[in-house]
Length: 258
Image (cartoon, rainbow, N blue to C red; front, side, top):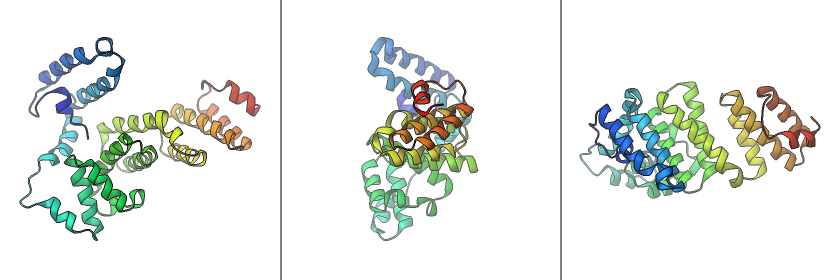
């Protein structure tokens, strides 16, 4: 979980004016035009931090999760949870605790030992904690090039948020994370069949039609590779109905005789 206050170089009590000044000063130093192309990633983080902390509602939601970093305990809570190795509820709470206290490797080790994607943490954590935990876990998996697992967790979050909102103003960041993961990382990290299934999952999540059209184009390309031209043709035709101006389809249309 990124510490937006640290990224901006401000304290938790910083007011709107201080947030804005910090953003401007930091942006001047790390703007790609000044610091070079390698600064693009830092600039994106800075912009996200500013957008969250300059919006009162989004900042309140972020602070709610952040406050857990400094939540006091009257005893060694982590040690207690670690001792309960046969209790899945304690292990789920330990994963969340470790993630919030920057013990990411330990958290992932426990998550893997409990079954990874097969470990239903939503059964053992309160809904809001499960959603916060799942997002942080997805971030850490992505950092370790475990892209498919990160994708599955993010898709679960989007599905649950559609059912009953929790992230609200923070949701655009979650959706952007998922979209960028799909655009840049997922395809090369899974086999063709898994990729098609992932695209089918995305199409169930209620994203805008233009996004769906792009995913369906990619899905059609993969189906062609798998030798399923009939299915590819149907998918591409549906994609063009969603977005008649869909780009990069000339060769694919020719190949599928559309």
